[in-house]
Length: 324
Image (cartoon, rainbow, N blue to C red; front, side, top):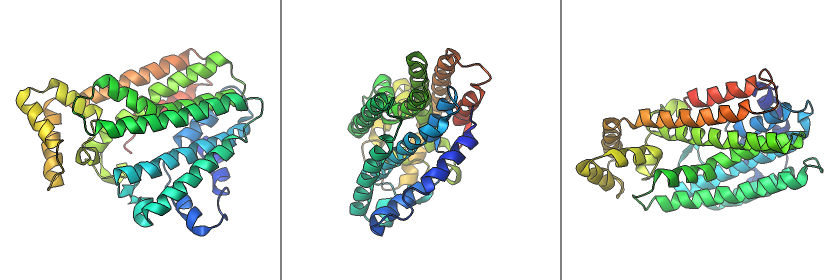
């Protein structure tokens, strides 16, 4: 099976040449900028790694892997506009570096490029691949809408939140694994098992992001620490604290999440004080571990040998121990 680094290297070589010389420059320059951010390239790597479980012809998955990465970055570009984020991976976001109109148009072009690339998949598997990809694209939009609606609610339940991050984040990771498997001729059972593994992995991945947003290091995480608190996002950490808090702490938490802070550092420190009182870091880590174990369990049921699956399991371990 391909290692993470090998899968990344194969993918990056193909991506670099895709839009290098396209014009007009002012449409494609922001796209080149976004795709040069680096990042983990987890989705294309998972597509290639899942493919290599069933075939050594993983090159056939490269167009789909490129499509998945471009689509993912398109969603980040538009998310940054909606969240008014000024940094992405320690660099100015596109709408800050250029302007909102440029960011919107370049994002639209990225979405079209993603669909162009996914259609280059093997014709035999293309109907299934397109079904998975289009359904996933729609679900990501649904997740983003839920995320925006939750900003104005204090009563978001744990189940609602987990469903939101499943749609916004996890389904694209799941789709990457399933698409890689389908193109390489995996059985429906194995492809579906990888999809379920990807969903659990994706939920754990987002919960880790929630944790790092509050307890991480800005130099490693690439975004301002406490950004979710400033934006009044009802993350898993907020839900854990709210559900355990007494009346006075809950009222204080609700008050902090009801306004825009004049002094953002004071707000972050006040919220973190409540989070720490109820040990939400430990509770979030436990939920991450629970989802990783679900992902492991799905992988154990695959028809591939344990040795073949080793690199995939290593990747899961890396994603839950990361600091960025």
